[in-house]
Image: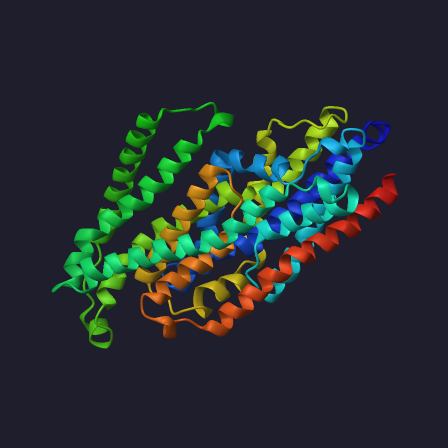
Length: 421
């Protein structure tokens, strides 16, 4: 306890610095995954992606980011053995933030789309095993998270595949694809608004003191979906046929209809990502602040101050703006060839999976979901449409992430223990 009262301010300053570094890494790597489909399909430019992410990542983190933070903070390790040594939990959370941030920086510099969730979970487990012992790790929770790494890309891929098949049946195989695209376009835009609004409301915005019943949530989401669909319809109506392009590619005009729709899905994906992945950076930070403010008491539940959410949202945006373009190239152009229709299906499927996971409080990997969704879109054209070599390299980088985060965190834990202990 004396260590915390003596060094409390230093611990909070370090937590803020490491938390900012970590959220910068999330922006450089994970947000790039989220925006890669939109950029890769040619619907938006890199600058537009940064602008969209700046608004909607921040909004997602601020409005809906409160729920998942709890799972990262208190579900992975049992803090009970640390009641007598609360400073160990502080060292561990600082070590985990720094370890995960460094690994993300290395991966982003090389253009590897790794998982920030993997990074921070691996780091927290590494510190717990080194600093407390194997029994401190909640292996049941780890098992759930590991299962979600398999389930989430499969679910993302399945939703993307079904969306792609529906577009093929309703639009591409119709006698007049362009007219059908204009007719069905607003319906697909409605889906984006409805799904994101519904799950955001379902989660309950407790930290903003706004809670609705199930019926009220459905009504509000339906209304929001209609508003988004109406705006989408106005934009879609402005699209005109491009006869010259249609000669080279039969569906060129149809793809033009889906270009404004991709803007909506990019916004949805950014919002969904901000609500889910901000926890990776601010969960450990919130734990450190809580322990210091409670004089060393390791509480199971801690209030999540709004300033921490704002800090997380800001760090994410800076990361995307400074280094996000490298990972965007990998996910947007190298797995399979994307067009606006394919990009739309992949992005909406990924956003749907992320917000569903966010609703249940399970820290899934946006990277896995996004890659799974892009693969699902590619599979609609057959296995030959996928670059299996690129997918193989991505999977290897995922496998390396967990031990890399764990080993670094264990090293940093002992260094911090040596400095302050």
